[in-house]
Length: 209
Image 1 (cartoon, rainbow, N blue to C red):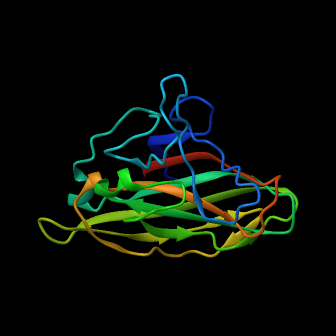
Image 2 (cartoon, rainbow, N blue to C red):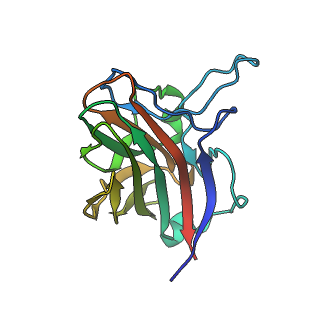
């Protein structure tokens, strides 16, 4: 069995640029996971997509991927963590891709220019703590000298021990190259409760060697 090789990742934590939990409380609004800021340096929390051209925390070093588009080399984007809820409700997770030009406009609840490519759908996490994982196997293909299309499939997702069947991703056209392959995750809970917290423990881009 092939071993995945992580070349970019973000992890949950409390220091600057680590992932913060979505402690949405009574809100039922779709919310992007943000990275922590730095109050001492007056740096606010923000949505910082994980990508080849805009990395978060490196694990295992950085790889030059000039062949990613030219060869259609497959790669995996994987998100995992857990959710704690205080009432009967459903959790929905989505994986987005966003081009470099749209990153600066992202906020916790506004994702203009981004495209949701994979989702868990709504899965029950009723007054409990349940784990989740969402992943997509992707290929970026040059369709012309100025345009790249992102294709792939969602092999599996699981929320609170409920499995989501595999499916093709939502294909994305008009990307400019590796610099437009930037990914972030959102969570939505269907019924707000003060105890609600969704923790994205990690987000990784992996090659399969």
